[in-house]
Image (tube, rainbow over all chains, first blue to last red; front, side):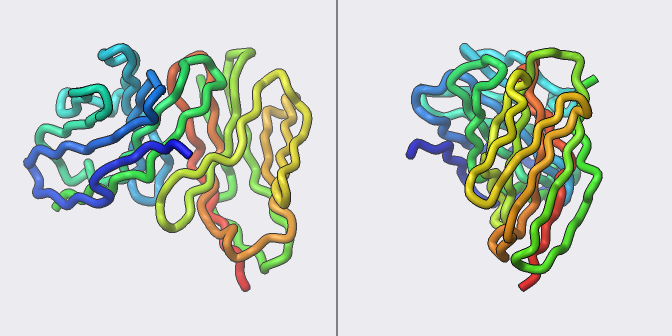
Length: 115
Length: 113
């Protein structure tokens, strides 16, 4: 069964460092997303991406964040200068279509710890 | 405003008991979808069900059942004859015309042996 794959599963980084979280969406999907879950809290939308550009972003997704699809398979989230409050589980998701009911398939998450 | 409320933060039941997780949503749209996801201790999000706003039929899948009541904007989830493996955090979520899923805060379910 096709799945969304995220690497690494856990990343520890020092405050102020840049970090890149990687995702391989399902191959025929066209819409890509990043969500964040601070420990013990709800899952929050960060950004959606389609046709090589951001289609929507939340207020959380400030200038420190960027997304990229550098090749035909990977979808990355970069945090330029990490802060302690960026520590969270980051989920990548992909969807075949943007229609309201299209199911988003989530990856297993990357746990980011900023120290 | 779009919002999903899961009033139960944490529930504990003894194995084999039935348990219902509540979900109330708010949206201005007439077309929307509701979801339930399970997050086991390993952390991944497991899709359980999707329901569209035009289909109020209740659904049963094995020990799981869902009760969608548009009149009360609720989409409750019942686990029958609970098992220890059902222990997890369960999220109710809403998707409408915006290209994003709005999650509730989750209900942590403990099934005690």
